[in-house]
Amino acid sequence: MFINNNQSYKSVRPKVLVVGDGLVGISAVLALANKPVDVAWVGPQVTDRVIRPDDRSIVLNAVSQCHLAAWGVWEHLVPVATPIVHVEVSDRGRWGKCRFSAEEAQLPALGYVVPAHQLLMALHQCACVANIEKIAGSVVDIKTDKDNAVVDLSVQDRSITWVGEVVLAADGTRSLLRQQQDLALRKKDYAQVAIAAQVRVGQRHAGIAYERFTPEGPIAMLPRGNGRYGVVWVVDKARANAVMAWSDKTFLLQLQKAFGTKLGLFSAAGARQHYPLGLAWMPLPVGDKVVYLGNAAQTLHPVMGQGFNLGLRDVVDVCKVWDQASWRDLGAAHSLLRYAKMRESDRQKVMHLSDGVVTGFSSDCLPLAMLRSGLLGVVDLSLTLKRAVAHLSMGQPIC
Ligand SMILES: Cc1cc2nc3c(=O)[nH]c(=O)nc-3n(C[C@H](O)[C@H](O)[C@H](O)COP(=O)(O)OP(=O)(O)OC[C@H]3O[C@@H](n4cnc5c(N)ncnc54)[C@H](O)[C@@H]3O)c2cc1C
Image (cartoon, rainbow, N blue to C red):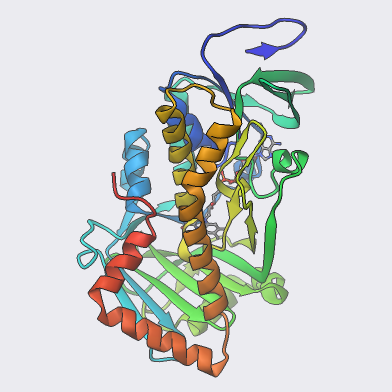
């Protein structure tokens, strides 16, 4: 598979290189595990996550849950997944409010909250079972010729070159591959930072998730079980360092002030993590012999909890395109353009929705505030609209 010291191995199956060991990269590995391709997978050996486990709460929608179940991942998550049966969306200081329920949307659950590090571990575990070993290293360079992608990897001080039909780049927001291929990226800085943590709450949750908009940014409270909630608190960039430096006591007090007492009194905060927020968007998520997936193709604001769900649909759709072509011409321009076309509407919808919500709800301008209060009220009264919103957030029919 590798050309290394003049050794080469010839296989009749097309060769695919997956780059990245984040949530989307490993999902791509699993999606390809039983397909008629030779998969190589590369990701850094020691990552930040090993030193600092990711304690975020990730909301998976029903479509994602279905794909994860098909790859054997979901069974590892069942003990730690909390179903969301109600969502309450409100605007601080305004009357508008909207409640969604799984029953009204005719779904078993509106989504499932899972701990990010357990999701990552479960994906890794399944990749091991699928016998796809990760090459502990990084991509340093990519070139392409008429038939192949030629990728240089740095693996423990050694240089290895991979040659094959196509690369799936899930190497994150700052994608080196995208930079090397000099592809267009649209960017927007929201001047906001998400602070993620866990808190203990005074009231039992009964599967209710809350999204509360404030002029500074939204606060999401996600049920985690055992009297705990996962918090994603979006604050002004200028204030983020101060919020990170607060004592737990001050953090809990300020969060309570911003969110209110709906969940009783907050106590016991876990470690805080912070994420600068922006929109990064590839208008065309493909390059010469490379398909960009997940954050490498689009990084969204977490307000709608859609980034990974959307990245998973990237993965599923690239396999669909290749499947329809009987796993031939994987890296050919016509295959890649077909993929880009297939993804266009879903990506656009989710991007516009999350960007619109961030922009529309992060403002205290009175006419806008009244409009969104009215909008929340209208959606709350319409079962059809509620179902439409619930299904829109899934992007695809449930499998
Ligand atoms: C606060 C917050 C809350 C969120 N909540 C939700 C939610 O509820 N639901 C949801 O669906 N999404 C959510 N998201 C979004 C979700 O976290 C991301 O969409 C998802 O993690 C993207 O995964 P990825 O694998 O594409 O990218 P990344 O996680 O960035 O992974 C990229 C990987 O590529 C590797 N890499 C980089 N460069 C190289 C290289 N040169 N060679 C080899 N490997 C390389 C890196 O080591 C990394 O592991 C949230 C995001 C934030 C910030």
